Image (cartoon, rainbow, N blue to C red; front, side, top):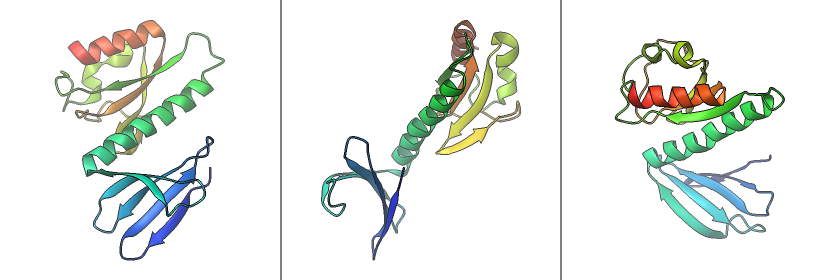
Length: 160
């Protein structure tokens, strides 16, 4: 996929690409650090059809949603030929008993047989997190295991 990056003098940088359906989507990262999600016409990237200003928290959330799904899609493809293995995402909710605690205190692998293979946090990926990684509200955990194990892991993260 080709991403076009265009300097916008005095404003910032536009980064966009053409989707398979012929739509041009992207972001404008302003010099002041703010971000806009944009939709432009296919033939003229300067003709903006829609612009949605995003706060830094919204930008982070969108990045986690898209980045987490990308990791899940890649892992799902890699495990496609392995019967019984599934990939799933879990969000650490504010009320999770493991919020602000090391991941190892949940003993997810021991109790469910599930492996946490990555954590998405504020747009960044923490690959192969160790038991000492502290879980934060809104972390997105990427897990691999059986359906039964993943259901058990979800219960552990919700209830302890």
